[in-house]
Picture 1 (spheres, rainbow, N blue to C red):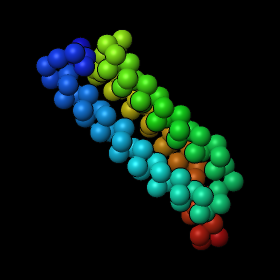
Picture 2: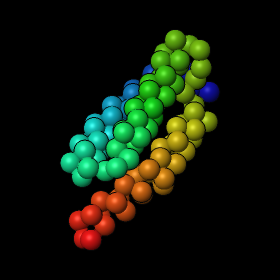
Picture 3: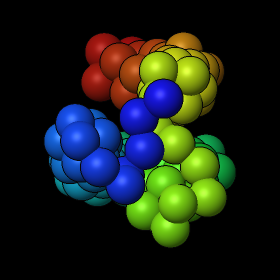
Amino acid sequence: AATLAGGSSERLAEVFHGLIMTMEEELDRENDLIERARYPLAIEHTAAHDSLVAHFLNVYWQAACGKTAIDLGVLEHVSALLVDHIKACDRAFAEFYLSARHG
């Protein structure tokens, strides 16, 4: 299993941290769009974004402290969380946004 302690695990940690930073930037843009669209579930949706980022950062820092490893299982777990968010929250917002623009 890859950890942050040595070898290629350092590169894996860099990639994971970069993913978190990119995700945070994209979620900030999405939050702006949600606000401009006056989405009725804006508070819940942006709270879900905050929760995702916090969870991902917690995984990263747990690995940085040597308490866990960033390995394929961890990456599959965080990927599943993100996909679930997209399928539920983002899909609902997209439907609202498209209907508001074309309705």
